[in-house]
Length: 249
Length: 93
Image 1: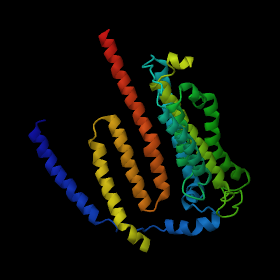
Image 2: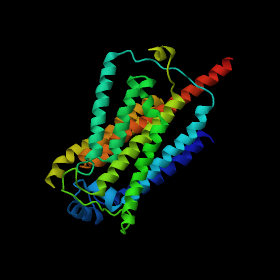
Image 3: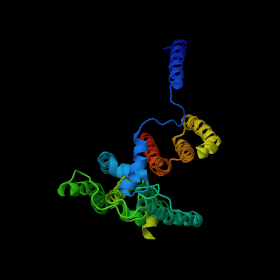
Image 4: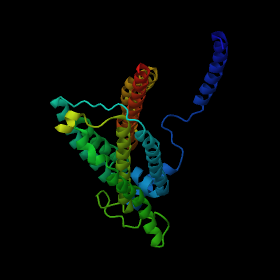
């Protein structure tokens, strides 16, 4: 295809697309305009009914808890897929086995502070997820990220416990399965799946929101461990353990 | 309502930042630099969510654009570079 032909195709298409786009923009509702009733309804009912002051968490883990279970298993399936794909790679041919030791104490110090701060922030996000913004998903990623910093500033040996499948796999099972078991507990008690049956507690305290807290914790564990499993596979495939001098020290 | 009115100029600024950041990410050619640019663009999106008063998506965006996504890109970059070096070595042999 010549350049002129391409231009001849491009210009009319762009004009057509632009016209359609401009037309659709004029039909948009005003910025900040909200039409659906659900947001208003949820804002009204979640705090009084579920005692969870973070309406977003009350919605994701209670009002539409089954959807969130599906989302959690999407992550689970994604990690499973990556693991299966990369497992094959790791067996065939040892690529690139080189690491450099971190020589700067300043960077190491920053890393240590990042680990401590990250773990604290992650735990806070998970624990208070149903009271203030946060929750198991972002909290879990922060926790896993903080643990990964240990790999960046330390050696492979320091990081080894966090890439051990024999530890990670059961934890992932507990996280992902805990969600389902909490739902099944309601079913066993003769109520619909995932009914919030643990009592709502006092609004605004950690002992509130009933099973939302448990589901949130399960999601936190599942996300943290899923990411650690992902890191473990990546590190095994792409990066490389121990230089001789590292092994000796 | 008054809060939203006072936030409007700030929202305008952040919208402009986001609009500027997206092409920067697209136009960066080197994947490693693109990962960095994408991280900074992610922070501008976080600011956008904050000024639109949506803290939960802001937190999710922060961890996804700051931790999860760059790692996947970096792993892919490391893999491609390793592969390229390996093919070069075999060619040298």
